[in-house]
Image (tube, rainbow over the protein chains, first blue to last red):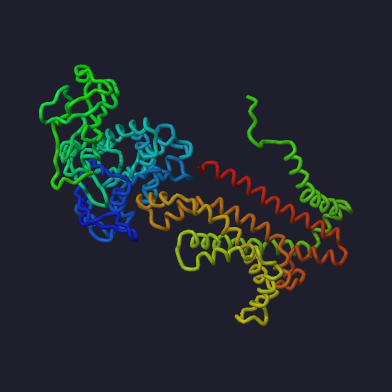
Length: 322
Length: 265
């Protein structure tokens, strides 16, 4: 079910967390809210959930204005960074909480909980307490708990932020598969562009309480609308007024009129990829990414003098820097 | 591995701790117990089963229970307000909570008598009644529950409450099903300490109770009266009963706490 936020503004005292944010999230999509910390992405998620009340603006879920509706009546599932597990309840009781509160029949709850335990792969752990689970298991439990009440939208606030890198990667893929199975409209808050690109089909980039751009991962990477987005979704070099991705930098042994001379500071071999750190003679550091074959052909080594030209570059109106 | 944990089981430290505790706690308690059996088990039984002693002990139990039940509810509420609400003068109130600990209990008794006694300004006279005794006990044991619950409430994960709300739980349900179960160990431990303290309370009670045998005479005052009238052995016998009751409460508490905190973390 779709989510539409219109003109949402939220202040905490002097601090503006959201400044006139407008966003439409299509039903069934998996959208990432991506931005640095303090960009307002978590606040937007909490406003959608009803855990914060906006100072101005409206939130609609599935065409219904829910701005004044309490969180318990919104039908949203919310997953917290630090799990928010009910410590005094077993896994089973945690997952069934929403159903128990809704006074569903015991047999129905038991059946639904068993189903969800399978879905999140916690078979055999139903009688454990949260303190007896690993971080990844706890977060899967929290997800099952949120899904139990069949929410119209699922909201995830940095769900993998507290987990170690390996578990994080695993859970990302798992979430992606889960979304394909369950198809509930999902919004995921993250500050990790790789996570957003890997998991989401749409990304909304936020910075300084404002929405910067919304699009598919590819669109954001190829057609960023401003220098901030370009820099946030991938590495970027500045060459005069233009912005260049490291893999769009061409290195040549000789000058051809449009190239910039530079000195090779450092060469790092990362398997198929070779990273070259350069210092322009006119001043300024550059990063280039070559394939192993390109690097071999050039015979590049630290201390060499090379000539650099962009293959593909972007210039933004106003020429604003990052 | 021969690595010894830092500070674990140094014989000197252990020796000092045990000697100190023996001197200060164990030996006096043993002496009281020894004294209570001066005339053998028969006399011990006679002393503690005399009508006046039984009445005093029963009254003590009753008013102590009443006081801690009130404090369990009010103490939790005060802790809640102090942790969750913001208002002017919160710091002052927070300090005020400890006043019953700091105040000499006899002063507390005097204050209560002046306020709720026969010539009190509020027109409520509870002097020489069981209500008066309960009031005194509520006053002196107030800080126990507040101070036990407060830090737990401060540490309580607010996300849990928000999660419950997002799952459809109203405020009352969230309090009953999520907050309260997490506070129960603290409440129980506060109540247990308060109850132990109330069982032996003397100073604050002795003035307002009036100490009418069979009516408003609590165990501690009964003990005092026995010593005054040379019934040292009876006094010691009743003391042992109080002591045992306190000990049972504390022991039960620690068992309960261990069981409750097994899954916390």
